[in-house]
Image 1 (cartoon, rainbow, N blue to C red):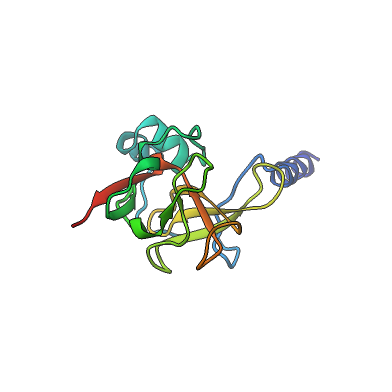
Image 2: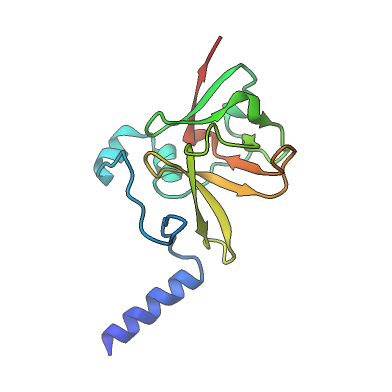
Length: 161
């Protein structure tokens, strides 16, 4: 009987988005090039970065200094330095989070389905370390029609000439 209760509780948590599991497109758990213990992530990241990148949190809208970043350069994952977005693809979406219409390359980010709000959303994560970056939506500008809505605290910016 306790096993049935545990299984039912786990199923309810998944259905209601109380637990988010990072999965590859195939549905299998994802192995990443950069792997650290939870203690190592907590040491290497600020509390806000840890909450977002490892805990799938979200920063307050309009709170990121990267929202107004307009220089030429590369946005990299704050956890591992992986290049994830080019400055040329950044645009003002009006949402309060840095937004991009495409990643730096096809292998820069990965996606999984997130049910945290009770309905499916496409989560965006760093392809190198699995850190949660934000979400992608189908209401962006051309040429892709996508809006990668990314937490600024999950990124660092590297200016380029």
